[in-house]
Amino acid sequence: MVGLETSIRRKERPVLLGREPPAGRLAWRLVSPTLLVVFLVSLLPLVLAFALSFTEAHVVRGGIAWRFIGLENYRYYLGNRAFWESLRVTAFFTVVSLAVELVLGIGMALILNQPFFGRGLVRALILIPWALPTVVNARMWAWIYDGHAYGALNGLLLALGWIKEPLVWLSTAVPGAHVPVLGPFLKWVGDSTALNMILIGDTWKVTPLVALLVLAGLQTIPREYYEAARVDGATVWQQFRLITLPLLKPVILVVLVLRTMELFRVFDILYIIMANTIKVLSIYTFEEGIVFGHLGRGSALSFLVGLVILLLAFVYIKLLYSEEVR
Image (cartoon, rainbow, N blue to C red; front, side, top):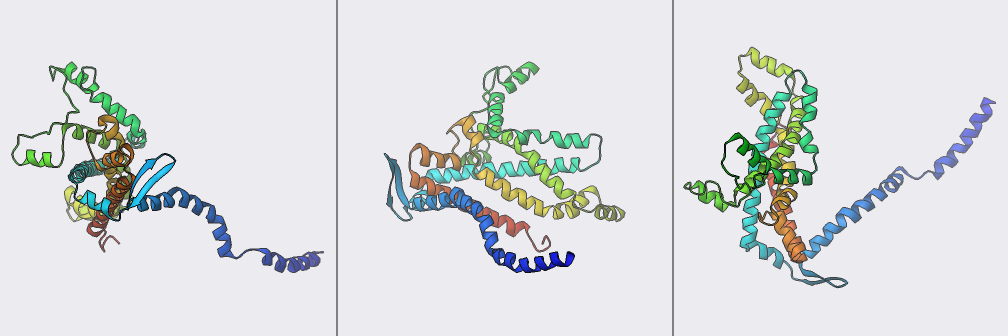
């Protein structure tokens, strides 16, 4: 009986193998639905936007009217004062936010990497700000910074007696404008009290994510390195500078690239709190493409922002991703 079943299987095997598609064809069949969705949702709009950036296009009844103008949109922005002002404001917001988030995130990660009672609970609680939707976070900080007495920050300071009347926290005045050198520089980069206040709100939300990424990097550093350094008499600062910081470079690179991309296209919190008052690049792009209906110029501006982010990512990699990290 067993011999008969074996004989049948041997006879069936060539037939079944003949019906099976080759491995490569089967793989293409399995991934083709995903590739189709990616093409329709991501690549096709990207290609159309890139094509629009070389046209003078605007919405008309029943579609889009366009005229090919070559690189005119790109030349327009490179000679446009508003574009360079928006780029300076965005760069200032990005640099200051990154510096604050990195310092606070590394500090928080170093503390959370130490053993103490309730460490697991604290690690979970610090993620609450990051879990908040951006719109909720923006509305919350708009209420905190409200310039009336019922604003949370003004109410707290009035209750403590630290101020006599409500302060306007979201003004466009330049802080330190009377200070020589610093004042003109801050005015040149587009700094304002409102921008600094919003920067605090955005940092409060995102710093836990930075701390979490750095904490993951810290846990990959062997304890033996620190024990050997202590035996050699290294101080805490020397251990941080010579062991922790170099071994955290890959994580810091990820944080820099990730946060630079997000900060350069920051829109939600600025638009919800200040509408069009603070013109970073994303709000400038929104005005050109959506509010004014200049689809070609809006597309060109989007690709200029992407180009700036790519250049910054390349600089980060050259500075941090050295041979010793590899």
